Amino acid sequence: MSKTKLDSTSEQNILNMLMESSSISAEQMAKINSTSAEIGKTKLETAFELNFTDEDKIVKTLSANYSMDIIDLKKTVIDPKIKKIIDIRYIEDNSLVPFEMGNGVLKIAIADASKLSLMKNLKTMTKMEPELYAASISNINSFIERFTRNENKKISATNVKVEKAERTNEELVEVGSEVINFGNKLITEAINLGASDIHIESFRNSAQTRFRVDGILKVMDKYSKFLHENYDAVIARVKIISKLDIAERRKPQDGASTFKSETKEIDLRVSILPTKNRERVVMRILNKDAGDKALSDLGFEAKDLEKLIKAISSPQGMVLVTGPTGSGKTTTLYSVLKHINKPGMNILTAEDPVEYEMEGIGQVQVKESIGYTFEEALRSFLRQDPEVILVGEIRDKATVDIALKAALTGHLVFSTLHTNDAPSSITRLLNMGTPNYLISAALTLIMAQRLARKTCLDCRVIDENITPKLLNSVGFLPEQSARAKIYKGGGCDNCSGSGYKGRMGIYEILEIEGELKAGILSNLQQNELNAIAKKNGFRTMQDMGQEMLLSGDLSFAEYERVLQSN
Image (cartoon, helix red, strand yellow):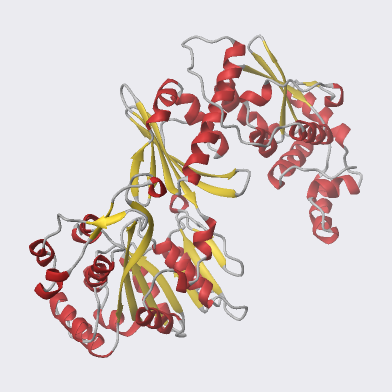
């Protein structure tokens, strides 16, 4: 008997069906469960090994229980039109075979009765009525292999056509193909432009796609017409590749997908939100390289890097990273973990979601929907003997209290907090009701950061509109502003006319030690804590931004956008 290619859930469903029909006894099932681990095979493979069942018995039971005809897929020719309306990954992931279509009917072979739940999705996807047939597991496997063998893996970048109001079955096939090409072309261009997010949005009389490039959303007008006329089909396509329910349009959904281009593989995180004018989609493009950066690649100055490495090399304490969404906090924290990750370290992370997989680190996805919160994850981590804990985000007093207490009992704890700068994080923790003595004792370092667009070096020119008076208004000293030359991007082919090329980090690092610890313990006001920090050499993000302005790396417009708007 050949190995099955079904997942464990499908195999268990088949075994349950056999038990319910008395084809397998309870004693035999117990034997399967006990033997499976011993011989290192799946439960269904074990059932085959023990001769408790076979493929013929399974397919006959399925046929009898659900009134399906049996189909031999070895004698069945693949209908090429099916590839154009149903994504190959959907077929592989669900182990079902749509083998024939016509007259509004789509014939589908299954080996697992649980696939019946997918029929509603397939009906919505294809606009055809599913007609089900029972097939053996090996039949299903071999058919899918033949199906995929002939599939063209290359991404098509052909021009799309406008969808008609009324379509025949043949026209539906064509539109389905166009939607697949449209989605592939959209994602490919976003990757090539270095976009972090793709937005797909519908309005009353239009639809649009926007790419977030270097932190700024840009409308991609060339996709608007096709998107508007095929919006539902495009959304269904996104749901299919993200393994979401295409029939659900009332509730938000979150999913994920992997996009394979000719050169690399990209992970996508997908969020779908119902609105008044249909559903909108945001796809986050997860650049795997971002999770593999060394600390030295993040743009820290030598003194700041030294402070950070000192804090993360400590056996205990808490390090906080603050900043708005999209400021690079996740990249920084992953770089920190990479720096300290060694075979002798037990590192656990609680994330929402897990964005990058890291070898040698235990990463846990929190699930608020089932009550598995950051707080609960943190409690469970403390029973797993960790040296290092990362809590994706501090959202409430309970989580911060547990995290700080963990930092006092021999654990190194990392987390994020939403504040505008490093000093205000202390006030934020106090306002959450955290005792000042706990903050003073456990907190070792706070880092705030932003990401700013870097002025394009190929086309930068002196910005004649920046006067000494204007520079003085943002904190420059008169002697600095009098001789300062501030640059801006002129726009060229290298930066696609934007004047910006790439992004850079702007940081401030606040060490919690000595006089500052005493100030927290004494309940000093934030302005007093700021004064202590400044006296001890604390450099703000504004200070770093001004240095970048003077060096020509940062335009005045970008300085104002990133640092003066907070």
